[in-house]
Structures are given as structure tokens and as C-alpha cells.
Length: 242
Image (tube, one colour):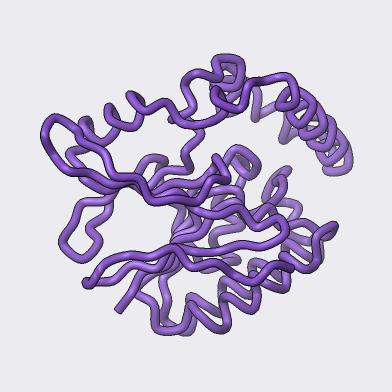
């Protein structure tokens, strides 16, 4: 048995090759897995579960539902792009929505699963925005807007975010090492798995004398990958470029 971890697929009709790579991954790798964990940013953006009628959204939900029906449990975390995913999408996809962070037992080891954006504490402006957009005071009026208006607003927010990134030093958009240690310490874990930073790697660190590890997952823009874990260990697997 093995568990599979992916994140930051950023699925959109504008990148059909990434969508096809994801569907192929589900059909080839997911069958027989102990679980498929999608740690945020499955979609480029999500404006509400009433957008399930969008063709791509419906197809993705269908592929995930088929994966779950075939016996592989599907778990989702919110990312910074799809934090509005809710019960209707999860029902359509046959998926279980997890809290961020969530602790799971992986082959006898307590592992902390996160999207990863909360670890980027040096990016103060982003953390302020994150708190705002996760609040009921922001989400309730946003979700009350017509669907097309929400799509237009989300595209504007994405454009602003990309513009802001070009003005920020890369170092502040990566995780803060002390924030990593604090999360491992607080949850009593020796293993962390997250996405968000788009810097796939395996990091080994010391937390209060305990040997710990941090696995960072791929982004799927022009090529993706996944983390495969079983009783024997773990490895990052690169997918072909597309």
C-alpha cells in the first residue's frame, strides 16, 4: 500500500496539457493507493460550488469521483486559489475536505499535512489578505454576487497577485524556517508535507533534538510530480514535461 500526495495543479481550461496529465495520473497511479491527498490549489481559482456546471470543473469532479468509487480515498485541502471549495464540490468528487493543518498517521509516523501558505510568515501583506478572504465578512458578500461577476473579480485578484509577486523578494515568498519548526513542535510531528511554494524538495531538520523532515510538492504548470510514500520510505516522482 502507498499514499500519494499532490498539490498546486492550478487546473484551468487555459492549460489543457496539465489537465490531461492529471487525468492520466489518476488513471495510472491512483488505483490501489491507500489514499490520494490533494494539498491545495487543485484549481487555478474557485469562485463557488455553484460553478460546478463549468465543463472543466464537472470533468475534474467526475474523475475524482471515479477514483474514489474504485477504492482510493480522496482527500482535499484548501489552497490559496480554491479556498471557496465546499460541500457540494466534495460530494460531486467523492472527496473528504480536511482542515489545514491536519495530522495523519502515515505507516506509523505522525505527519502534518498543510497547503503551506501559512508557513510564509515573512510575507506579511499576504498573511493579512489570507485572513481577510477566509473570513465570513468577505466570503458571504462575494458568494452573493452573480457567478460571472465573481469570475471577473477573481481574475482581477489573480492579476493583482501576480503583479505583487514581481515586486517581492523571492525569499519572503518561501517558508519561514522557524514557522516550520513551530508547527512540527505544536503538533508533535516529525514529518511535514506541503505545497504552495512550488519548490519540490526533501528537507531534513532538527526540532528540539528530534530528526524531522519536510517534503515540498511540485507545481503542475509545464510539468508536475507527486510524492509517493509507503512503509519503506518516500520519494518525489517527476512527471514528463508537457
